[in-house]
Length: 135
Image (cartoon, rainbow, N blue to C red; front, side, top):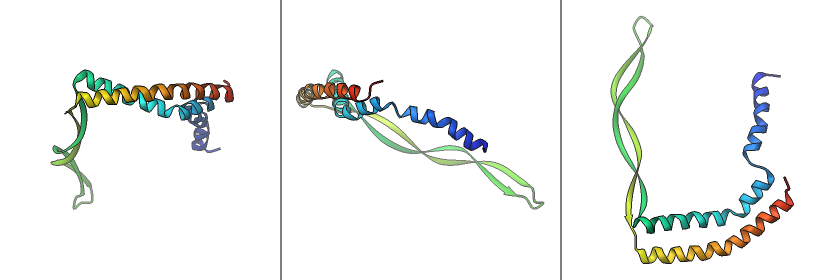
């Protein structure tokens, strides 16, 4: 058996384990909306606490660096030379976004209600997944 094939077969159980057990996949699949609403609720509550929201934007810029240039000399040897050059760089910049506290409060209240509705469904789904896929 070739070495690469052997290594690939050895890593197969690790790759399958990384996906989770059938019970974990079932629970994850059936509670995704609850987790999404909970995450949004946490974000809205943090915005209200801070008084502003965070936004992100990509900022492009050029930065000076050393570029390598490989060329062949007249005698046939390969020469490496370095020269300054500009390379495009993209950075993510965070910035503050003003919020309307009244709107954020209504959003928080609606998300809390939705989270309460989904909590019962999520709990029932978790129990069903545990019954269907005991560990």
